[in-house]
Length: 363
Image (cartoon, rainbow, N blue to C red; front, top):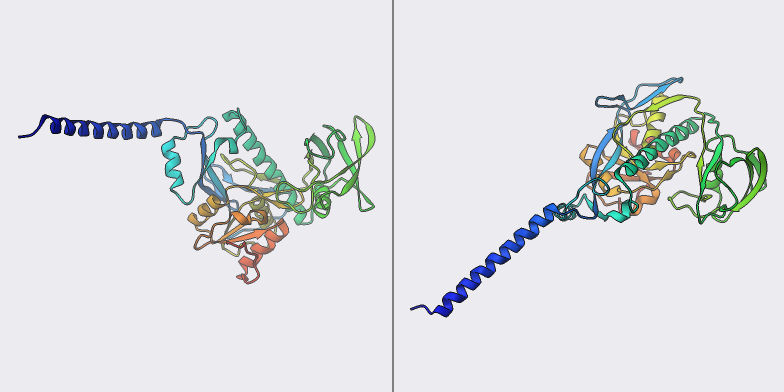
């Protein structure tokens, strides 16, 4: 004979288990439905800059100069971003992303400014892409020996710059005196070449045109914040370069600054008889300055994974990003500091001369 007490205990146990199951189900439902304040970075598509983009034709077109057939592939890589303004990432998706070795989860606040709208994010990304294309054109033409006339217009001054309160928006930098030598600032790469050679804290003297008047302004450079060598001014410039060759870069639905180095290599490959790839698949990333410096970017593990997935065995990246490399079987990371080195490295790979290629400690 069963006691009423034991029956009651069993019923309470079953009710407790049912409540627990309902709680778990409810948690899972909320995890799927509730927006999480995170951004998920994962491998994005890659594009051969020597080829075409489906439905949009040739990615790099050159007119007004002799071009040559290309072979092999120079692949720019991307990161797929989910989350942030205008998008919806759930806690369940965040949990799944954390379980993947090729994905990274970041707080939304670490990626986007507070209050940014989807439209603003898209506009910034597009502006960065356009700037990277112009930088790539200037750097590539300069590397090929072309003169690229420019006029350096100030568009802003950083709050922590020594030129704060000295330079103003719309000022034109006409001359610079460095190590006792005065040079006219009339070529796109000139100022950046000087800065690459100047240590942080170096005093530079500028002749500046402001509202039709000439001024003399001096200030100290600072340590770069973007991984480049030398120093920087801490100001925003529009070099207003005049390209001697008509180069068009057409890549749809891709933004950001990190394709600059691969665009520049693609331009060089199109404009030189010697193949940069030797028929191989070389991938890479890195923003590029007008002076040819390859600048640090984000998303290195995701970009390497995407490159490997699309068949590349070589991955060029900024020297400053070496500490972010995670070894992947079948693909080697090769760090570069500037476009000249990136070009030389590509030629070494093309010639099967791998012995002296630079390495990242973990690559």
